[in-house]
Length: 222
Image 1 (tube, rainbow, N blue to C red):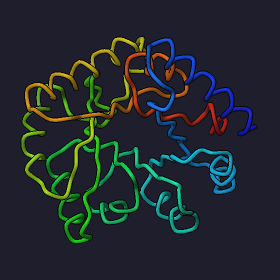
Image 2 (image 1 turned 135 degrees about the vertical axis):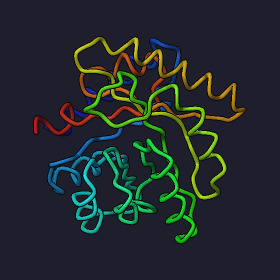
Image 3 (image 1 turned 180 degrees about the horizontal axis):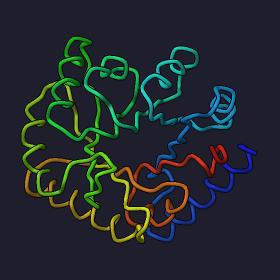
Image 4 (image 1 turned 30 degrees about the vertical axis):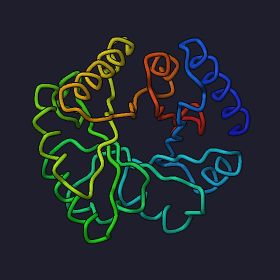
């Protein structure tokens, strides 16, 4: 199942990328493996999936401890309490879900102690949904200005989860425009846009996504 699913998704990535004048290599496929077994992660990795995303700290910690071969890049996608930052920093390639100065400060502190620079994304709550994490757009520039002073964090871009009840493409377009505006106003480079999941990653790629977060379409229903 995983073999066929990955082959299909890779073909769709190539098609969506070429249709929007991009290269398939511009898009990182992050397999969302929350609640999935290590055997499934192992199978996917052996089939060439090198980016794997987890949402829950304790589940990630167990999987990372049991299976972290060279070449596998874990991502953290979910809500990250400040008291659990030490379980994540330095073990993942990218934290997609930073949404407060307090969380950024803790990541910077732990990264400093570990003598590393942790790459992060800022999560934007575009739909202002109370059920979702993320910072409101009107507070973004202030948050960026604070975090840019930290020496052990590198902001690589933005992440968002559009409201499920609405078409996703306008939100993808908006997130790209927000990113472009921040680059211009702050004079920084933000190469990453983490947007698009199993049902809408094609549109996300066409609108500039660099990291699509795909779970069900790879691993099946939870």
